[in-house]
Length: 283
Image (cartoon, rainbow, N blue to C red):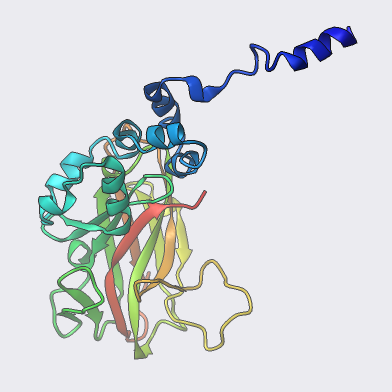
């Protein structure tokens, strides 16, 4: 028996030790397309054959949303700037450079690791109580914003902001989290002692998911970042978590994201709203 084992070692690998690299490139591309964008990038380091397969349009077309062409068609961005010969380049562009859609009221981008669809609903795309009254809200341009106008809370007692979108716009089988994207003036009033409440869910089921939202920064930085405290974003804005929603897919529901006070409280001012962002939870 030992003699036969040594003979097998001398004769090289057995039929069970097949080399995957001998498969046709098209076959390897189909296999890689069943993984994730992150795995595809890792596969490029395996061998030249894997690199060619992992960077093929076959792979990256499957990583793009099935309706990506229809979404791009809703954009005011020049289509020439999105006309890449490589689907991988298009994927990376949509991940790193959000595009404006729906009359510049929404921003669309892809989650780089998963390819899931993400949106930022602009302040103009939200329902804001007394938003058209310049005694309560001011609208102006801000260089740091991707939208033409942002909204600044000037003088309001009853705070109420609501964003809505169809769940069919989101990626199926995905857990999403919604954030308010905003800035604070140096003199901000009314949010520290009386924080608003947030609710996220489909119409009719929103009341089941509520949480208090902290919009003002603590006077002292905590030793450990609390998940409900505002976070500083790389684009120069704050974001504060409003809640989570699991999108099953296959349904035509309306997702509602709301931030409000149950009762009128103290006068509030100094909050600059860019919009509400909804993106997949990490992991």
